[in-house]
Length: 259
Image (cartoon, rainbow, N blue to C red):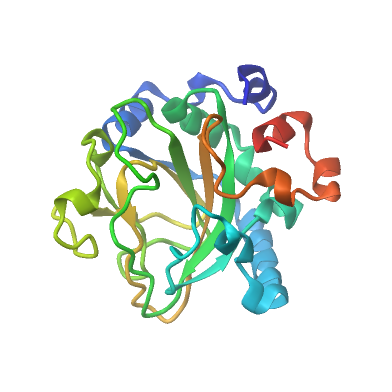
């Protein structure tokens, strides 16, 4: 995405404070705080429920079809994918200026949406190995991918919230190169605990993973995942984009989706 397209979406570097930028640089993640209002949350949750009911066993098929994800989907979670095409409720997930300011701080201005997916850790499951969202370690500052977690429920240690090992994006190592078993807890990991409606940005080269949901309800989130424009999208947006989506979204959003 060009700098002008970002400007059209209201993105500027001063949407993040110097302290926020420094925290993100050093730790590899940043809690932006509440972004979704209670009304937006209700609308999104309702639409998610409709989609899960309508898609049934096919839910998440677009992600499973991706050559970058195939055979890597964890079984302990409920999935939906290609949310770009599934309702205007989801437009905010790739157009919010403060989120895009944080993403572009990590990746630079030349960015695009890689995928927009829903994941809910189901009761008694959801544990993932610590991993980075890129197949190899990269030099410090040469980051290729960056993610945002939009919390549809409160995140807590009890309900399977994401764990992150701060600063590991700077190590130029992957968890499997260092840990005997990346499923194990890491001594430096933290659990992302925050209220529903919050958005957490994380440099996708930082080590992270879901934890076990020890409650009786799914722990729901949407992942708005971004990459540099020289990287392949997790879901090829051109292959899935619908005419009604193209009619709805702005020219800047089209550029951001690379369609």
